[in-house]
Amino acid sequence: MPQVMEFKLPDLGEGLTEAEIVRWLVAVGDVVEVDQPVVEVETAKAMVEVPCPYGGVVTARFGEEGTELPVGAPLITVAVGAGSEPEPAVVAESSGSGNVLVGYGTDHSRPARRKRVARPGAMAAVAAPVAAVAAVAAPAPAPAAPAQASGPVPVISPLVRKLARDNGVDLRALRGSGPEGLILRADVEAALRAPAPVAAPVAAAPVAAPEGATRIPLKGLRGAVAEKLSRSRREIPEATCWVDADATELMAARAAMNAAAGPKISVLALLARICTAALARYPELNSTVDLAANEIVRLPSVHLGFAAQTERGLVVPVVRDAQSRSPESLSAEFGRLTELARTGKLAPADLTGGTFTLNNYGVFGVDGSTPIINHPEAAMLGVGRIVDKPWVHEGQLAVRKVVQLSLTFDHRVCDGGAAGGFLRYVADCVESPAVLLRSL
Image (tube, rainbow, N blue to C red; front, side):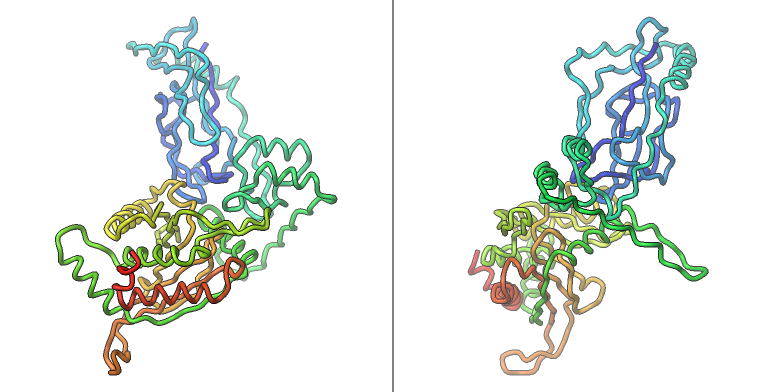
């Protein structure tokens, strides 16, 4: 008899605990190969095609398109192996692929079976055994995960979940000390040592809505954005300072660069290079606050996030090690990540790990804003539109290209002097790019 292997929704990383089924890529009865994508899911971070580590015949699918499943819930079952039964048309190695997303993989301790060659008429021979196995062995769909009172619980490690479950600790009531609020083993152990359990927050009663109102589920990407922004406002004592700057010389420098041979350089790339130079002078703004240790952690590299508006909503892709990139390299990376964002193909790793965010809301035709910090970062620079305005230049009134720059910062990591110094240095570089060249 074929062996039925159950494939569960894997942990897709970065503390994600659930995903919504967007589109099934296989149907019951289809033959799948090892590592073939079987379903497209949407997490709070990105759209992801999930590959199955088993090859064989799909005997069951769990969840309709649009259904949200928790990590660990069954996705599909696959009949693999042959034994003494007639050989199916395609039977994959029952040891699976061994590939891993996060938290799932297959056992390499058993030798892989030889992949059998398809024979004419073999599918008819295996159809009845497979159907019988599916009817008897396919598990019932997993019960829905209990509703979280404050959004998904950010836990990656199954050991942490087990420790909490065995000791009756409500993970929803904990505040994680890891990156982006990830709950670690130390957080659970600290809760066990606490003199009294922390009560879980009470869910708010539904708001009465007038007839004809439309309700939009606050889940997926929109829900993740709402939770992150709410957490930022709850935890971070933020302050904002701003300044108008004459960007005429910066725009002239960019025009001269793009007139030369080579790839074009975007305004965003120049502003990003200015930001990394400013962060080298004011490293307190490239940091995070570790509440568990009661420490400010200054970070060695600048992983620069930038806000990108897509059909799915606002996302913040991250350029790794931006401090070591040239304007040309930054421009290329911004372009690559923006295209992935527009097509919904950003991986979760492309959207996490940022240490400072650059938000160019000038593309929407507005002059100013007070950005909300992208938790757990310590600051965000906002850039308005660059527009012709009257400006006093060298003692004379002239029409210049003016931009408003605003810096929102975590007042725990620095005082106004450092924040003002950072913003003033950025403005000086915008007004006179030679200032930047002098510091390189």
